[in-house]
Image 1 (cartoon, rainbow, N blue to C red):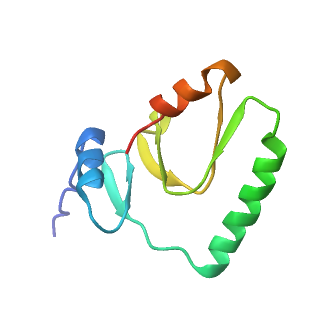
Image 2 (cartoon, rainbow, N blue to C red):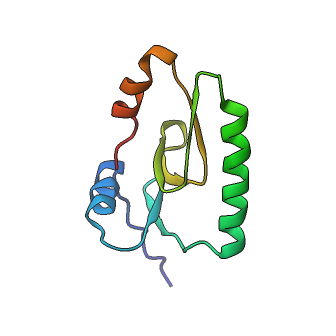
Image 3 (cartoon, one colour):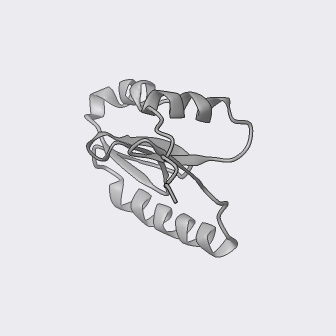
Length: 105
């Protein structure tokens, strides 16, 4: 019995497919694509509580807290994923620029 080769996608091909998708989300890890499930009520409650705490802790610091549904590219891991929370450190004078140049998707 022979093993079927796994399809290998480039990051750019995955991102194009994600942008075109009307429903569902997937993660890209090392050329493979994995379907993601929706969150439960308990998961969403935890996300909101953690987000509120992070937002409070980051006040007055050169950081921004982003909610879920933000695509993040992790170059060192050759991955593209949706993170539950993202904290990004930015220079205060370049916040508007950072918002314009973060990973779009």
